[in-house]
Image 1 (cartoon, rainbow, N blue to C red):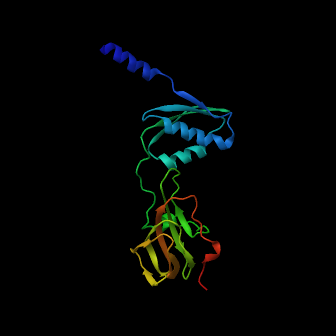
Image 2 (cartoon, rainbow, N blue to C red):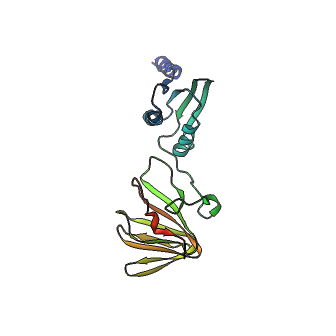
Image 3 (cartoon, rainbow, N blue to C red):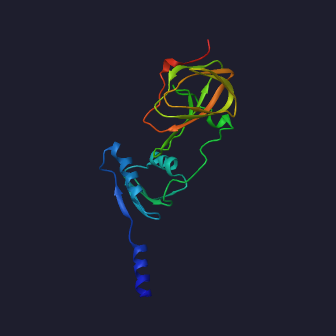
Length: 216
């Protein structure tokens, strides 16, 4: 019985990895197919990806979504025949540090149209999170919030949050709850205003670009 168990274990170890050849697929279908195959793997399982080029962008996506939890081993690097063994090392994405909110230099990129200088980029998630930066005197004009609650943590600078019944002073360390559909307007102080938002994920949370502006 022990010998039979050992033989079974040895045959499982020697069983070749399944191949996933994405070369015939349309480009938009390749990455979703690969991630779907990865999701089906048991911990310790792997497949050999066959592609016509070095999928560097795919690896970047794996690093974003599964940092520390996957294996990536090149087996062949010939023209139109790249083979990479991708192994699932953890059952779920691993907890990890995303950024240092105490260090503005770690999220000092140019703000997008929403004022965000950092966004949570992991694709498979239940939450959205952003770091919003307003210049001195900058504003997000009065508007009705989205249909979900938003939690805000003020990181730096100062400002004012106008509500239906008065203003709230925003200073570093303040933790602010914005109830769903509540009216709000942000105005940054003389040193600007930077805050972190966390809320339930939805497809997009874009403010009207006309509502964001520098102080006049």
